[in-house]
Image (tube, rainbow, N blue to C red):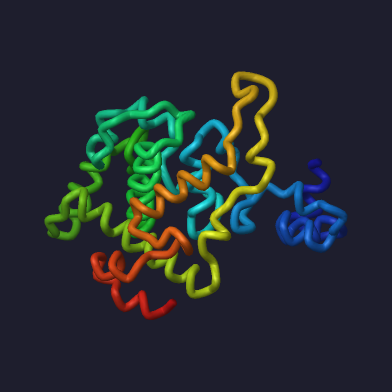
Length: 243
């Protein structure tokens, strides 16, 4: 394994092929190897499994740039940090293994916040909605102190929402939509061994969660893209003409 890591880093021998990523490597190797890849939008999964962290599975699927564990808050945080979650309007903590409407709201709202953190170019391990050093309201106070603005937490979430919608418009322009918002078949099989034994995420469950997500986001459920009405509400009406 260590030898292969070095070959990949140096792009030597078989390592040169693997350095292209699992999807491209599987495409060139063939022989059914594509079914072994664990990716969303051709991006390899992080070390957080969506069978257990249900809303994270949803985000892996719908995230504009593929599987990413730092585009939303992780499921256990809703129950573990209710006071901080309430600062961004999340007041009904749900168990990690559920993927109901409230959990979808949790996924989308924290996705807005993480998107805003990227926009403000601040560290996600310092600012965030749960275990981080500073809570959402302190982020607002910092931004206002630096800029002289008078933002609210709702304004900050709106920044993240605008960015997320623009990324989805870019995807739509390039031909990506609901059909690409999916997970590999392996994710629908039950985990085996340990405390997670027998836990699985069904494709039907994910599709239902996607419908709820698009509805809450104000996107077209058929294609998974922002509607003109939503874009105009975000003062991004011009972007609707790009698709």
